[in-house]
Image 1 (cartoon, rainbow, N blue to C red):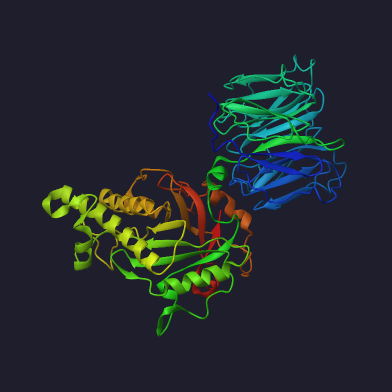
Image 2: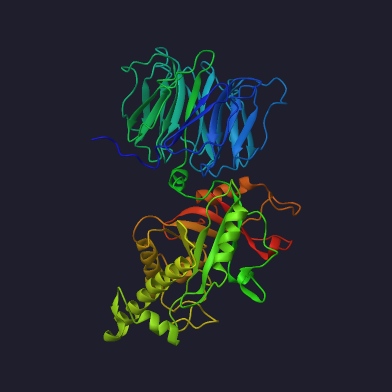
Length: 544
């Protein structure tokens, strides 16, 4: 039975002229193939969210693409030995470069844990790999020696085996409890908890093997040859190679770089990668002209989100059609389609809520009693509210592939019903979860992708540990840093700081958890303004 395509099947092949070949849904963000490089490219590394990558040369030049940030390079280091390897930190906010003599150069948040310059190196250094937490790493030589630093454990070496063919690469297991070494002939040596899945020694390898890369779960690996051939083992899925269009000498492939699991999941997003824009609602309707958007709206917004309702049982956005027309124009030729959002809340005791939650897929709630009645009302309210919003948008000739559920304000009511304006949600997280699931189900039945807007702080306060049924939900995460570009406030950091938020590895100040919730995958980030007012009075957004 063939291995199914999985989110870990996306990878790049890197050429020594700076060329990049993307496979399995990996995003292409540029290359150096059409430009002169001062020295051969020796490898690459991807950002945490897979929306960018770095290329490095043997002279220590570092070229960032996509959301990869430039953190420094050793090109001005005196007596610099040839650089042979590059690796990124887990959150993509730094990287290491390693020379053939074992010197380690660390930039950004990459920790220096030691080097092999004073070790009894057998051969020359050829490979480097970091632990999953970035607090340690391994340095490997062509002679098969393995040197471990920081929290990287030593599990064995190929010092007695490398005489058959020099070692060229290393790939650690997920927990760092083991690693694989590969030789230029394609032999694979496994150590610690690394399992052996096969090697290329009996394959028709028509060139030197240059690297080994493990899958996201460590249950397989790829072996790559300098001609661009890719050999897959275990659960490593083959999604492409250069076997039928091999680079002509002096061009050669120098390695295979796997993208992150998160990036492959977000590849299905209809939003453009690394784009800025704004979210708007009925608050941006022109004064005195409730069907028109205000004239002071921004002229450019590559990614936009428009509020359909301001309350689940009322407050439809009267200028929805006008704002949708604005979003199309503001996106320009390079922008993506706009998405829509619903403001979510629990049912109240008002007449509109009673009419909306009385009957629906959960049944006729008045025929029930106690918790059964409350659960019925909660689900019907979310389902009917979302269904009505779909109908309202359709009536305005406004459609979108992606809809968001705005779930915020973690202060709960003291009753099973909302108590607007003091509390948007009931006192029961289980009931709140039912309302959210109802809205998700209604929108999905309408044929759209449904995501959730919230934070990892507020969502658990409202719905506890609730993970919606069905596919993993896209996340629109609020409260992330204010960046530049496109904003001009002094002291702002570049968009590379957003990579951990897109990867789901960031956390809020003083909060120990990550930025994800509801079992979802980040697609969109809402930035929190700094000391200066937000442009146009709107919250800016960044697409992962």
